[in-house]
Length: 381
Ligand SMILES: Nc1ncnc2c1ncn2[C@@H]1O[C@H](COP(=O)(O)OP(=O)(O)OP(=O)(O)O)[C@@H](O)[C@H]1O
Ligand SMILES: [Mg+2]
Image (cartoon, rainbow, N blue to C red; front, side, top):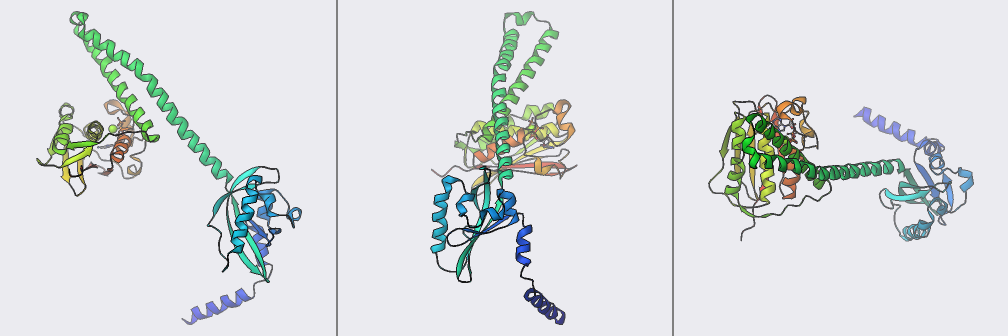
């Protein structure tokens, strides 16, 4: 207690003894511009930070109007703004917490800045002090990032759109050979090869659709047309459509869906995509002999669907990125029969959210994974 009291007294004494040139010294080293003007808005203080940012020397601006530091088109409105602030009575206060403004350097270049201004009374006179930070580098970086995201979306859109026609041509021709007159004359070996061509074209088609969906999500153009839909029928139909795939993979597919379920407000095709992406992942990653359980539980405002598998799970450090576009946790995910593009989960997230729901994933490495997504209940008639 005694020690604390001593420390407080010592601090008070120190602060009384601060040399008068301490504050100018602190102002000088500040990376931010500190500019003070009198009540006529003539510059009376311009620190080194301001010299660096604006390119003027303090002596050049002594007594000049503040407007010299602003783009011409803002100067008039700025004057009114500061006057309005000056006319307000009361304690010194911040004029807007860190507002974004534009400044003008000596060479005429405009730049983005963040500024706050405070009004103080100094020996009976009003002094306005502005503290300003040059944020032009940050703004430029943000613009570059926005442009890059837009360019990537444009590129994805164009590439996937233009790949559609050739992929469709391959599919149609392969089908016409298999189902046409000459189909019967083909040797089993050739038929097998054409089937491989068909499968490859289907995969290409699915990938193009996924790329188009990602671009739609990116640009906010993923449209869902939700309709009141029988919950039980939908969940059963979506789950059953994946049974053959699970059987082929030697994985058991259990369904725990109550007989009575409420009506849902969903886009049936998009919801099918949610099921096929999440159950499809479970089938793809769970080794033979494993088990997948699809459970639907009715809550107050939605139905929660859980897809749980006994697969290898996902490492904890990969989970935060698992909904990122093109993210595939492990190298195995990109190889062999497990190939994919890392688009299923981000698209599922886009669909779940576009329908007013959500999707989450939990996983324990070596134990398995559970994906939960919600489907909204239809309002009562
Ligand atoms: N049930 C799961 N068990 C283990 N890992 C999973 C499971 N679901 C997803 N993952 C991991 O998350 C990654 C991303 O999944 P996502 O569905 O987005 O992409 P993908 O399945 O690799 O490719 P695509 O879905 O485009 O065919 C996968 O590559 C995999 O590493
Ligand atoms: Mg997937």
